[in-house]
Length: 390
Image (cartoon, rainbow, N blue to C red):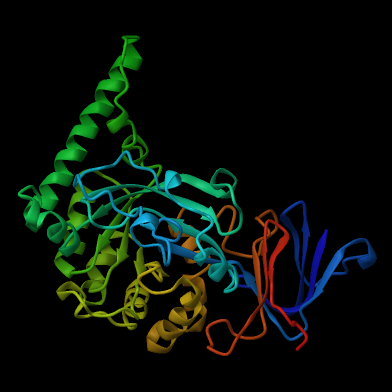
């Protein structure tokens, strides 16, 4: 058993404790709040006096491990840019847990991440949601598949414009996606009829991966920057009655009411990156706050390695400063991110029964001078600051 005591608990459930405790057993949280833990000699104890204790931070969109740092072509498995439609690809098969960025995540209190293909393709493949500690991907997985990546705008256009193949226009991007979804839905109907009638049916590897999307079990994960691309993504998701997250959502503040009306959540960022593309000219940290005030559920992303994953809490701080507010900014990298990624039953808040993924800071994690003292995943200390008492 592990006891964290005397900390300032921010549970992300609406109830906080100035001097609270968290009791952990077998990798799960068993008690949260102000209570007598009993015989402390029978357990490992972390005294968090003067510290902030939060659920482990959640990165809702990144390419950690699939686009490795410092390894060039050999470490870049992010885009299969030889075919604009590749839904059958799985990030699970490409993420390298040895990527040094995983240590950076742990040292920043980030305990789980949504990882998947980049945005070169109209359909890039399947994301995986995973913990940030381990060596074996199969043991690190929380949810797989977790989402299906799709992309609009400049990236697929520029990838294929010089190959004499579609897409080189936004019209072609939308048409390729519609065609793929149309064929997938026809496959779904054929399979259902065959199962109901008892007929033989030969599964199609390319089409099977669409069934969790069509059955609304996982969302489309839409790379969208420009306002018109955001609206095209919403239009197509509505046509096929699909779940979707709006990732990057750079011009979301320009159409906040329309996004709120759609009901789709936004994963905003990386707002600190360079405005090196035309479609990100309106990039700003004010976007999350405007979307939240319009009624949109918001998470914040580093989009690692576009901007570095270890500064995710600092990006949340910039968003707080520009209108999101501290409480919502912390939610954007904890419970909101977990809910958007469909894993809130296990992570994102300090609640009984959830995974014991916890970060302990010596102050507000959104401030630049704050340090992570401990990162805990599944009840085990996986990172501890050196010279803790220095």
